[in-house]
Image (cartoon, rainbow, N blue to C red; front, side, top):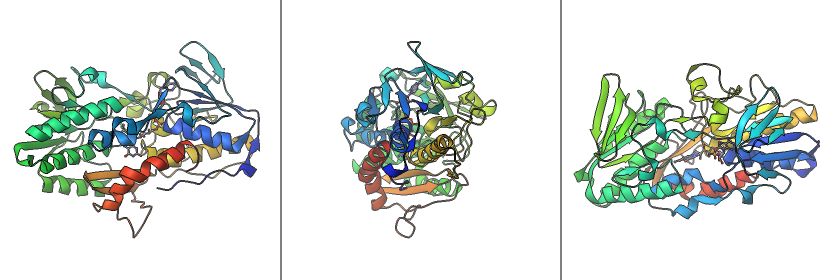
Length: 416
Ligand SMILES: Cc1cc2nc3c(=O)[nH]c(=O)nc-3n(C[C@H](O)[C@H](O)[C@H](O)COP(=O)(O)OP(=O)(O)OC[C@H]3O[C@@H](n4cnc5c(N)ncnc54)[C@H](O)[C@@H]3O)c2cc1C
């Protein structure tokens, strides 16, 4: 879990290279900080229209009622290194042949190196009947949408925990960020019902999109057993297609046809895909599901684009088999930056990203399993013998609720 350390000033490489970073979220800011620290004289430009910075791993805690909305909101500007220019616009077009990006206002930014860190897009429109303005109302929540959405989801869950009824949980069939979050929130709902003495008045249903609850088999098995013990009914091969927010009916596609579930509370997690600018560019995978969803076609070990070697893709946008967590960002960015700086310095780098991903899987308030794994589904515990990965531990809960945010902020500043 602990990432590579800070960069020493003595290692700085002198250059006048132009580096554009598209996206100033977790990965873009971390890349800017590391590049600014390692390069002397580079012209580094960050491009992102969003002025607020969201600490997204905290959304689950806001939606669980244990952190305020303000816990997850800060500003982008406070993390931008002094030597880096921030352009508050979106990239509208990637032109890898011309080695430039074009912003919403039509401004062209030529580059020698490009780091793409646009994160992903939540495709709520792909769910028929879904209206994000209704999050928090009439039993519909969505912890992914935004800080306000997470807070509104908490008020809907709290009402449900008082009254009981049918709670429906699910995840999309696309690649997604933090695949543990849908599971965590199901456990959190179960725990709130129990604490209020209303678990007997509620039925909880978890709809997996395929035949597994989690992509790592041993974690799937552990969650399956915990769900069974807690009386959470599990369906497989159920994908949310449409929702009737007035009647409170969710419709799922299954191999046997569509199935309707009437709910009193639902946590809608939409399909996820690359933002349009990447999806519509030559940067994406050229075929298969990853091509359709628009993920960047990068080497999984170096995060370097397979056809445009001066381009790197880090964070959620990277088309690699694991990742899409802030914990992965912490390991991906130093690798990509090492290769980029090596190119500038005229040397080679052997830095490799092994797929490290971590998921502090909350199983009740006060307990979590710190699940860490790599591309090969090996469990890769950071504290072997101290923090057992598949045990519900208080120490893992403390990490999730108290230690991870300071570590994340250090990562944005290139210090972790
Ligand atoms: C509910 C929830 C729970 C999570 N839980 C955890 C957890 O427990 N542990 C964990 O490690 N991770 C967790 N994550 C995942 C983690 O937050 C993300 O993986 C991480 O933020 C990815 O960083 P990123 O920089 O790729 O994307 P982001 O941080 O989302 O940043 C992307 C940035 O790109 C910008 N952008 C988009 N399009 C463009 C464009 N065209 N031009 C310019 N800029 C653009 C956006 O405005 C944004 O600022 C969770 C996420 C959610 C939503």
